[in-house]
Image 1 (cartoon, rainbow, N blue to C red):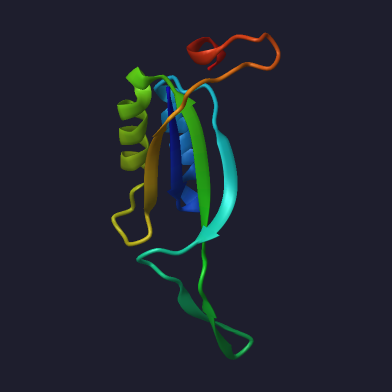
Image 2: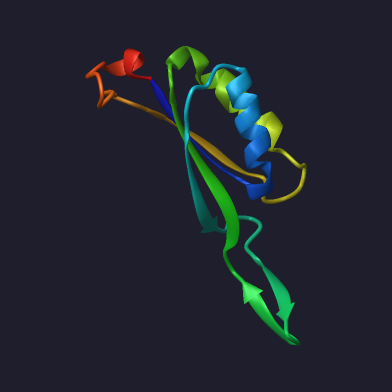
Length: 112
């Protein structure tokens, strides 16, 4: 099993969710986050005063999928979340040692 963590632009969330549902992903966790990378923030003017926005709003997706689906999920997120502009996000893939469904006690792939 693989844990896929993706940080994407917030307005792409629904489009990515629909694309992942279409390929058979049955669930994910979503968290609103702030961060910076190459994009490193920007300046804005509010009530006539200029101020720096150092952290850019993003959405973090966390999905656990079978090893067989991992590459397809990563490719789906990458192609759906891209705008071609700086700050599109990052995707990380980690190994998962185990999973347990709380309700039934099913483990590993059966728990997904």
